[in-house]
Figure (tube, helix red, strand yellow):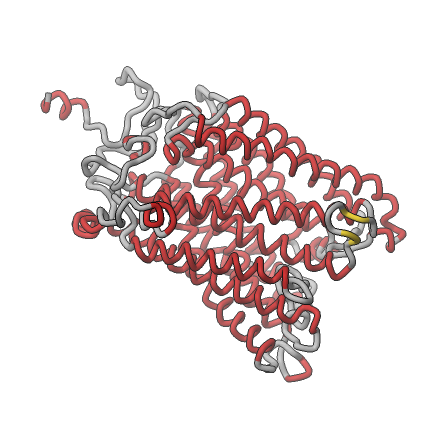
Length: 574
């Protein structure tokens, strides 16, 4: 009840989002739905930039030292720059804005029955700080020596010494871009958590909160508890570059491995910061398109909590070849294997939710199933890297590249496209083309696997990451044909996203009008109009039940919205 009082008091001011002038409605909006769209469009734009860097890298690996169209010869320095910027963009500037920020902004207030975020102006500020970080990162392409070329993980001494003048300004802008983005997502996370705690609708107890909101809040908590050490480390890295300090430079008494500890203490929870929102979307889609209650609701919430707790004690499995004492490697191997247990429980609960359901393979469901299939491959191959013995062999090879893409790509792109298609009618008030949606899915699913599955073989054969010219390593000649196949598949994978772009923008302007609840779902966002008006709900919703009551035997309809009163109460009111 305390949260409901906060909602009534806090949301009373959320009607004053500014007038209807263009600049206040679409640019400096404080409406959480418009801010979600801003994050979404910015993240999709950065995905295009990241895809272009991938195109150039794959061209170089298949056809070394040839003129990549529109670029010229990709030298070793340029290749390292592309590797750095591709990883940075895709992890921090695509995964986080599209999944964490856009999804949290749009879904959390609607699913908990709030009229807006509790701090709408802070929400607006968080987006524009993120825009500043994007500008800063893109500007690094245009400094005299080019963008940072020290790897997306920024390992010293390459990233910490003014002696490496070729990457000096690129590294400074890279650090500033990340600092601004982390500040942005800290502000956003404060909003998500405060809104969740203080603005839930009447009757929406913790046991009735949809899984999507639980997992989005979990992602924000994972970010909060891990980002502090990296911020401190980034300040020291910036000082090494601009003030001549030596925190990470051995010749000045510094320790390069300190950065690795700080980075990966944040970096591994960061994997779940990006992964959990994609999983959140899939968990909402499965019961809707299988017409079954979700299996193991509380088990999945607690499994998420256990996984997040374990994520803070696994970071050193990224450092097994750094000279770590084997007695220290063993406990990190154990915790790495243990963290697979809660996620295995979640996956089994998802499969149990599908079993015996009336499954309809609409576009969102296709992406959800594709997420399950591809992520299972990523999870199973992670076992090889979690063991110190096998990690020593695979570390630094393209096996790691394949594993990482089989975890990251399902979360960001399969989970992201699932979320976009599922909430598209609610966000834009239009329906997309199912035919184009399915064509886009099959192009992505087939050529994603054609691109990254062979890389497991290439990496197992000894191909090292971050080398610009595989032809210099005679042992890799046997993989030349396979590298060409992977590159062609990657080109088709990138080109296949044109189908999504056409479907997305055509549907926004020309798609048929969407009903309020086109998928017959139960959660509160589907009780609002499509798109929701300013303030979301015409009257404050009241929640009477859980979010996944489908196919109940005493109901004519196979779904029961959360805000529908019990039959006896409804009949008494009538």
